[in-house]
Figure: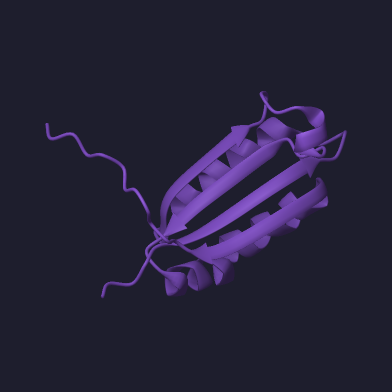
Amino acid sequence: MAASEFKHLVVVKFKEDAKVDEILKGSENLVSQIDSVKSFEWGEDKESHEMLRQGFTHAFSMTFENKDAYVSFTKHPLHVEFSAAFTAVIEKIVILDFTVAAVKSPVVVPP
């Protein structure tokens, strides 16, 4: 059985004075420089009711080939440096790190 992908999911509420655009650009720059990141997506919640959102505004999702690739990412000097800047502008955060249990894979349309 092949090793399952590993996800790093971060949900945040930025501090009022945070320069969110700079953090987003920094996130994109970071993942483009570290090969162990298989994919990266982020989004800003604009649809949920405030009561359900609980103040959280942004979600970041990274996919890794496996847990070892994730561990390698967390120790990378660029990640360590970025994490310090990221943490400094966060008011609230939830982080979930998990092995993927794929139930329905994306449909791949042949070219």
